[in-house]
Length: 527
Image (tube, rainbow, N blue to C red; front, side, top):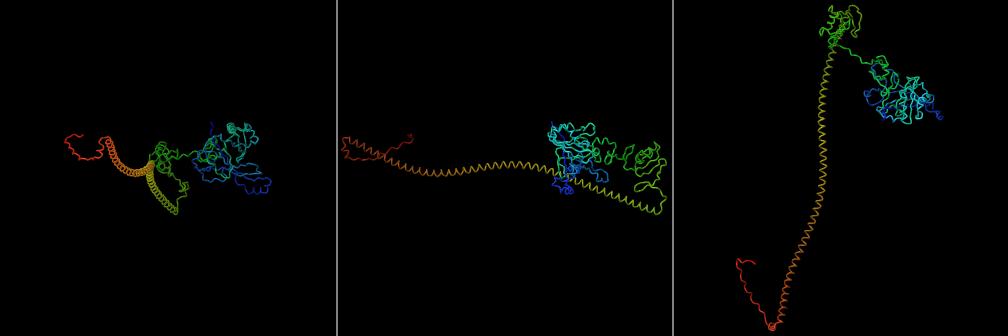
């Protein structure tokens, strides 16, 4: 199973070359002189679209907004200057960003590792000796030096991800050498190295800030990060070693301040006004006045401490003498003590009266303005409630209309389906009707042709019937003629055979009248 890690993106933002270096190198381009660049690397907050509250425990920079009123100097910006190359030949200016991916990914996808905070006591030979067991698997080593003192970074590109994983597991968190056990090897996964001319961070990445105590990069996936009230973030181990209760950067108190309690120590009731509380000037006991619970006077009777200070007016009451005993003069503006200069003059009395009138007018104006503020706040609250009710009603109406709309849409879908089915059926019926009409027209034509043929055949049959009748008549006549002829022939033969043929030949034949037939009787059965 592969392990998921959070990889980093190292972006080197290169600025445009300075005009001085361009002019200095303009005449020597034929001598293979490269253009000079100046590199100064800074860290800026990540320009993500999400608000600061959604960044989690990982801040974007070690310098964030603090409650101090003083403006921070320009030199306090977190800048990391570094150079790459020979400063006498090439100087490159830019901004070095170390971004961290916001999501975990498979570390097998990356082949590049970055060694952070390599001490400058380790030379290139020492670095090569440190990575000597993996020289066969390392494809490229690049050294980048930032502006932090006594350290630099090294990029190691491996040939295979198995060798990169083996190097990470073996050397991460271990010392560079046994003589300096505090200099630990800190390795991060690098997905890619970019050279860009703008400071826009890659999408889905967050720039790693620097711990103000140890000046190391803060990564919550490796070390615990603690953000205190003043929005400064530190390594948990670094802040644990800080013995003071203030912030190491701005000296702000790390823990929230306790709110001053305005309540009696005995009854525990919260006073509506500080004038109702009295504090003992001897032991500091806080009790309520005689018009509330009388615990301040009870404390006097129990302990014998006769002096109590009213918290609101700072006047001192003597329980033994039963009167106020304070003789201190205070300034009206800030309440500080002022020395007494004897009885005031008439001018001072007049001025004091004017001041008292002005103060009374100020109090009156303040009270009226406060009443107006409360009145208009009440009006605003009523309007807000009214608008809220109307908004809720509109929302309910919109919800009901949405439900009705959904039902109508469902009905519309059903009706559309039924319409399509009916149209399909209508089309089929139309096709059938067209076919039936075609068949009907064919049948009509066929019937018309049959009727015409029937008339013709009827005419032919009638004609043949007439011809048949005429033929029958001719046949009957011919039969009579044949019968007569046969009778004549038979009679002639008989006569020829007869002895009296001569007499018969000379004789005549007379046909007599036909005798009357007798009528049949009634009731006679028919034959």
